[in-house]
Length: 146
Image (cartoon, rainbow, N blue to C red):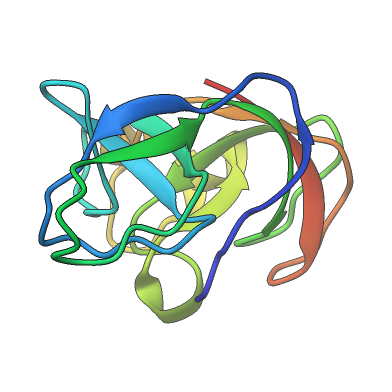
């Protein structure tokens, strides 16, 4: 999977969230938050961030909950240049295959093709901080803190 997050240090246990039974979600997928307390990998703008899937969810397996990490140290893939200490946001349409990517908040607000600054800023806000500098498509450590 492109843009899969890998947990390095668990700082809080995952919280249970609702998911649709028919939805398949890979471990390490970054998820958005929908009402009520529902996590989804749907892209769309204007939805807050739920966190990172703690386990795999197999489609149509009868389960309607998934554990979601909202805080921890992770390894993820950069979409654009990131400098250690940068505030980060997850934005749809950037990254490998256009499936969403992790970028410096300042760079994302100014650099997402086809989106205005106000639209880019509404993608979900700051979700954490870079712990390492990375070039586009490099993996790096980040502190997730939603």
